[in-house]
Length: 375
Image (cartoon, rainbow, N blue to C red; front, side, top):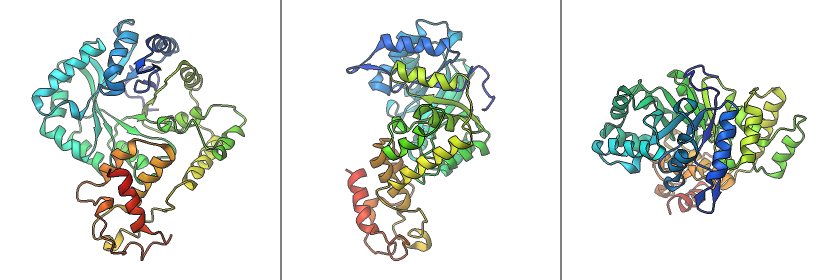
C-alpha cells in the first residue's frame, strides 16, 4: 500500500456512483446507515462527481455525510467533468456549485475527470489544470489529481505536461489487467514511472466480477476461505505497490458489510487465491466472442492502410458483450482518435486477413464492431 496522504485512514474508499436507490431517488436512509457503518469501522474516503446519478450523488453526500459529521471525520473527492464547462471562466462557478451541493468549503481531492487524448486538449485550452492548482493555493482543494480512460502513452503525456498532479485514478481489475483496450497494467506502470499514487476504480468491473458465469463461480466456491467474489477482486487490486485507495461502489448495506469484513484487516491474496483469480480470468478470456489473441500481425508492417487498431477494437466489443460494460464506448472512442481509424473506415483490402494466425474474417468482424460502437 502506498503511504502517501496519511490523512486517508485506510485504503478502502466509498464510491458514490452506485448508491442505494428507491426508484429514481437515492435511498437516503440506507445511505446514512452505510455511511455510519463505513466511518464507524475506520474508513473515511468518499468519492463523487457532479454527473453521478444525474446530479443526485453530490446532494446525497450533503444529506448523509457532510451535514451529519464534522469535517475532520471524512475525506471527500469530487471531479471537474468536461460537459460542464466550455471556457476557463466557467470552471470556478461550476466548482463553487459543487462545493455548495456537497455542503463543504473545500475538497480534499479534486480530479480532472475521465481524461483522454481528446478532452485533455480541451482541459489544456481552458486552463483547467492551472485553475485547479490555483484553487489549491487558495485552500479550496487539498490535492489535485485526475481520473483516466485512455492509452498508457496518453497518461504519460499528461503526467509529463503536469508533474504537479498528485494522484491518478485508473480502472484496474484482474480481467482488465492485460486487456489491450483498457491497458490497466500499462497505465498502472506509467503511474509507477511518474511516482504517482493510484486510486483504483472499477475493481469489480461495475459488478461484473460479482455475478460470475457458472464455470468461474465454481472456482471460487471450491476455495476453502468461503470469501465473497468481491473479496478476490478488491483484494487483487489492493495488493499492488503504489495503490492508495480502492473504491467500491456499494449499493446496499449487505455489500458494505461484506466489503468491510475483508478490508478492515486487509490481507493480500495468497498464492492459492491468485491461482483462482488466474483461472477465473482464463475462463472469461475463453468467453471472448472474437477469438483474437492480440498478436498484432494484422496491423504491423502496414497490413492495415487505414491504421485501424484491430485487436484493441475487438477487445472492446468482447468486453462489452461479456460484461455489458458501458466504459467500452469510451475506450472505443479513445482508440479511434489521433489518426487511428474507426472500424467503419475499413476499405476491405484483406491485408489483415492474409496474416492472421487465427484465420479470422476480420473484415466482417469490423462491420460488427462498427454496428455496436458507431450507432
